[in-house]
Length: 543
Image (tube, rainbow, N blue to C red; front, side):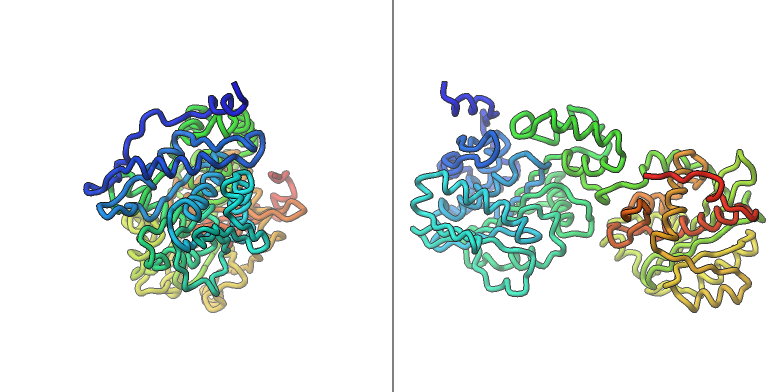
């Protein structure tokens, strides 16, 4: 048996093809068209590693996609699907499949002067698929004779039809007027905004009879991105909530409640496990993530294709949830406390958090948070952000102020009333916040302390918050808005090991978490009124 045949035996082939459930009633499965697409791709060769030079024999899941996309035809004879969304973890043969589809659209689709574009967040990322496609051409004698490679321009030209494959990046200043036959979007989740996606998919292929937008990506960490929008559409179609006969969805991944340490779950998410993905590599990555919680989100995102909030989860939710001890507002009346105020913008969430130092060694740091949002834009926010603002309002966890901006006067009056119930010693605020509100609060008799947002000021209380959470020495009552914000935190670290919450990198709101950290700092430094700070007497949690 030849080396190629031995390799072929490793490949899990599609035993019996079943047409996609998303085939329209009047569409047909054209076996000849599908066979031609599969045959073209399998004439290509792998380009990397131990597979280099071996025939590109499609794995069963890859062949299913190719047959579905290229073999499902409308009564007119043209392809039913114009958009294919493939979401799959890393190392499953994503780049190779994208490169093969790019070459198929350029050289094997019988389209005169086809324009096929490879798009990514930057030119370097887009070049990954191009380099694979270029190597596939050089390794295939039939294509090598017919394709001109313009490496410096990142362009492949198929001479018989004048068709070409060209790399583009996210700079869209001059990317209009295309007559696209195909677009390959690699790692859609890395797109900084939706501009390139809109330019390449909205109207650019109108002059073609069967343009194909082939979107292939791993899961991302930004739920306000174009990738999340397309992902949500794919999920809705897969779950039967939406229909779009031109859209072909494939998502390989796991649910959030699946055990991420279970090898069965790994297999569910990785259809090429044991073929292009070594199970030993996944096992090693899992063990590393178990030892270092900061790696858990990266493992979930890249290996299990789960959408995560940010690349590094700072506060593990199981740790936070174990601190959901009651923090009854009535029982705290009259006690000493410290406030943290994060105003954010006038159209956004405003957070005010009170932290009550423990009365003795058996007591905990009690956290009492308050949040406000403009009344008029709450419904818009629910639709845009997919966050339960309306439910939290009904439950009393989120307050609203009249109009479309936060009414600072209302909040000032609210804090004034809190001052009558609780002994608020200090209120910490971002020194870049609203000067007028600070002056008004001082006029009410509050001691207001400016609080820097740099590493110097933020690092000690941020580390101490984690330490107290791990020791279960805080009580937050399970307040859902604060929990959501804690889960959103992305942490920035400087070379000296200092840390602080990063509002820019955190994909969703963290105002309540920042306000908690500021209030906690004042409580720790004052040590319940004592002259000595807690920072002087105990070690800090160091990462």
